[in-house]
Image 1 (cartoon, protein in one colour):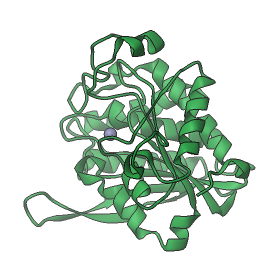
Image 2 (cartoon, helix red, strand yellow; image 1 turned 90 degrees about the horizontal axis):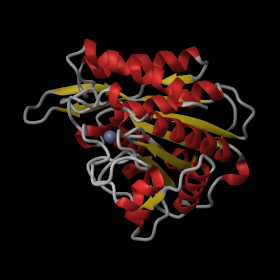
Image 3 (spheres, protein in one colour; image 1 turned 60 degrees about the vertical axis):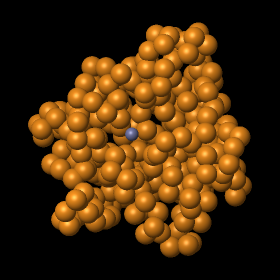
Image 4 (cartoon, protein in one colour; image 1 turned 135 degrees about the vertical axis):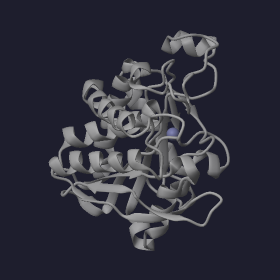
Length: 297
Ligand code: ZN
């Protein structure tokens, strides 16, 4: 794995934003083009791809828009044990959303295409690309709500990527930290968090384990009692001296000065962070795709 492949996908999403008014927000043409791009990459790689829809009600008015998520999975592995990884595909209206969250999308596309659609694995690997995260997590919520009880129980774990190349990058892992279940994840999340920390350590990174904070697409999975983990490179918090000693970068500066703004562009991405997270995510998915490593619920 390398971040170079992921970077190619992030560049494509930047171009999509540039051609569509500077953003990829849901609803909008930049988001629709992002969906088409992701579907194309995954279909070309041989994955079983679907675009389940949900209805988004516009703020203020009563206008409704039909929005697509993208779901893709391997043609191999047992559907009784699904290893799922997801990232939101929309940006805020204020900018192209390349760290937030083309970086997560690009990383998953790179993992998927490297792994291929028919690897010799005991468990299915499924990828989710969510619409309207920046509105109210509508895409991931509607997906989890659409599952039957048995489909929900078949998801062994969910792994969330939301910003993995912040310009002044940190290395955070969510899942299994101390605290209430809504902030540490349901049983099994500690296993997910531990494997993520291990895989980053294998790439020379001493990550910080933290609670689920703020909002991202892990929330509906946590609420549905699915063991969950997440990674992020930081947003509007400031890097401490101790963190800079471990990770490099600028003490006292925020992790992403372009968070939710027009300058969240391809040029700002921390390519080292993209590399490290790509490797760690690939390693984590590979380990959980092996039946022995699925966390007990
Ligand atoms: Zn995000």
